[in-house]
Image (cartoon, rainbow over the protein chains, first blue to last red):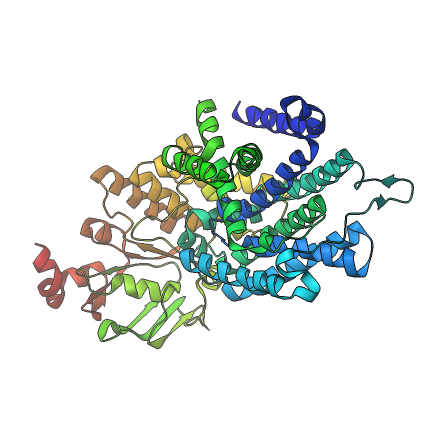
Length: 316
Length: 249
């Protein structure tokens, strides 16, 4: 029964996402707002692979998100006029950096791990912020844009057609999310749950904990840098703020807000975050205080997040 | 040749001497109890064998190979499994999931991003066996954190057993249990030892359990070995009575 409910909920989510460009106008949204929700949801779900399902808190995921952002921007601006190659470069840059930094910090735990992730994240931020001649510094990297994708038999105009771009995002999102979901149902995924639940027990079952945390970290950062590339393409712009620690904090807020023990939780969190930001920021520049207030209320009264409440309701 | 050979190990924490020059030799198929008053260094001694701590000096051989400085996970791969004084399980996961994780690691699947139907069926059958053996089949789909203390302990022991160990280390398996639970866990350990010919070393405070189960007993006091022998020899040993049994009685 429960498994059936889960499957129905999953199907409903995919149908809603598939039709989003068509029903979003109806409720007062617009297509690129939907793309934004989906991109940030991918980032938050990637973070949650590590946070919710391995039990490791990173406050530095914006670094790898930002490497995706600048990877695609710099490639299209300076190297090749090809969206997909730009994305590949962005994802590779983020993943390679994560693999190297992860190897250095993976033995740290809890607050020490979180602090070091911030520190490494800020290194990338300052590079983007200071290296004016290449990155555009504080002004960000402009003067480039996403380009139509040539599939030989047809061309997908993601530049001129917002809906086409939305579906590029949706396809990337679907592939990434399907891979993460499959991993979490695998023996490897269960070792991650084991580490989250009880690291000591995991170690004395013969799981080399540091190595598995490193793998989880790299997988998480790979998908967050994919989200970064899509974010840059969405905005046709790379902003140094995308690399900064408060961007990492936003991802954590989205995951916790939606419910970090639920696979779909961060999607809900990202949707609430982005929609609140969109509506409230048109009324007041203090939109972050509304998000902050909402966040505090959720954490105080519903520590399992918005989806956590719904799940408890439907539980027998 | 014995399965486990501990040679003159010591462990110091700064100026505190937790274990001093202790040796122990355990034969395959033996059930050895380690007893001693609180603070005698029993758990530290266990931690040295399982790799939770490294000894300050001395050597530990398992199946003739030096494991003194091996990481815990690598000792598990060689066949040493342990339980803890305070039960260590995965509280939010079900009994089956707890056992499944152990069984999959034991089968060498820990890095697999997918699992074939046949392998999955094999693991499931193994989990069912373990759950039955531990008397847990009635509640195998409940989160372990919701079970009674005794059943959590049984889950932990069955997880260790899922690893197909050659040596099982049990740190106070009946700690904090009532009479019925103590009896059940004692019977479980006895079955594992007799029916599966498993080599077991256990720390225990409950003397009924120790004298009921153990082939041989080692007594630690203040970090050093006080005596070693069969249950009869230990019961008759005057130094042990003075240091330990006398105090308890």
